[in-house]
Image (cartoon, rainbow, N blue to C red):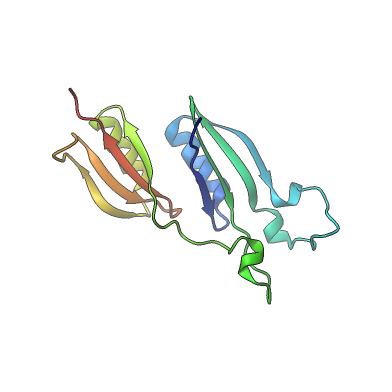
Length: 150
């Protein structure tokens, strides 16, 4: 069994995953837009800006993975629940990274911070030689932790 974080975005999923691929040294193995979906008589035609949103992306990082998509906004007069509720910034969870050492944790924290919001600066704590929390410029909440050396 494997748990894979699936992150939603508000139209900037492709940009976010290109950044994550470079930062984490991974490869986007699958990326598809809503415009690439096969026609379906039960679905209305999608407006051009929606067609370019990411329907699904899979980033492989060694034996780990991140997946994501852009949320569909509700059409005028449409109940947001019909399109998955539209985009909502993640709440109640953090994507946690266990860094190999404090230098790697600091590098990742520093890369995720620009344009985002630092929640807890990266620093040594009573349980770790390095820990920090940041919400990146795409709205994704990250926790960076370094395991204490035995």
